[in-house]
Length: 136
Image (cartoon, rainbow, N blue to C red; front, side, top):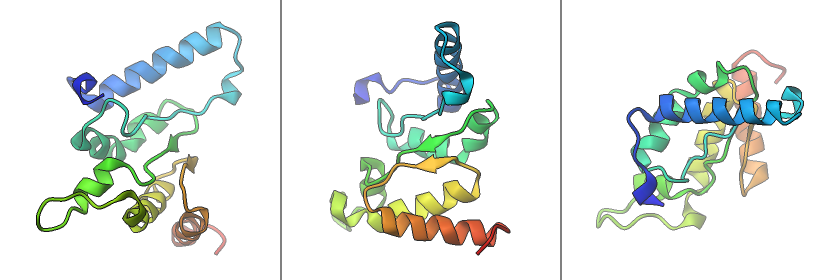
């Protein structure tokens, strides 16, 4: 899928694609209240594309729909956490990074996260919510 990772501006391009998909779904009769947007981290995206989308999550949330982030154990986390020889960390060693992403995107206003280790991410999201002024 890396060969499909060609973007002029990944945030703008994904935002445009999501808007088109929303329009098509609503035109087909789907209730807009039933829609949740997913930027598709890891799908036809290089690491830098995923990081750009995470940094600019607000641009997707500005579309007015809940945003779901699925970063759990993704390859771009493994690359970030590579050892000194450049060997990416294996998926089962990416859970702490997944937890960090979960907390950060929750603090940024994401509607939800897709994860493998629910307890860790639930704890992280609970802490992020408490710091942000929610019930702790």
